[in-house]
Length: 133
Image 1 (cartoon, helix red, strand yellow):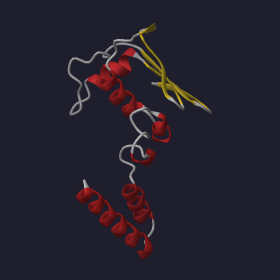
Image 2 (spheres, one colour; image 1 turned 90 degrees about the horizontal axis):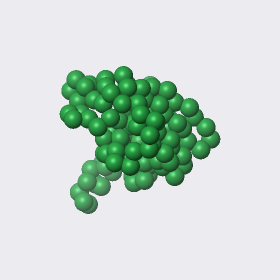
Image 3 (cartoon, helix red, strand yellow; image 1 turned 45 degrees about the vertical axis):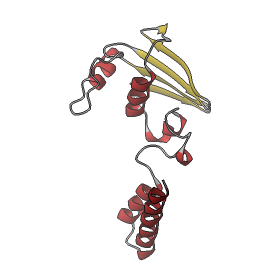
């Protein structure tokens, strides 16, 4: 996988080996993968997906759900806010990086009681949000 960043987004190149290995990841395989063994180029800007090519050709029939999962698995955390799957709902937090996760990370790196109180407050807030649904 190669990635080029700029001020508006990024370009990601996935080799045929990248997509082959991704589709066959033990415990997270994608059976009958559309992209397995193919080269994929993804261009993303601040508006989302700007261009997609499979084996060097535009591919309008490419399945979006598999593309979202695959790019999300390869994408560095600092760019996940630009990927169309994330950032549109829930305040732009990438998967696995909620307010609770950030507070827990601070707690692991800081022994202060104030961080522990913050985590407990966030946990109670999250439970309250779940009850409202």
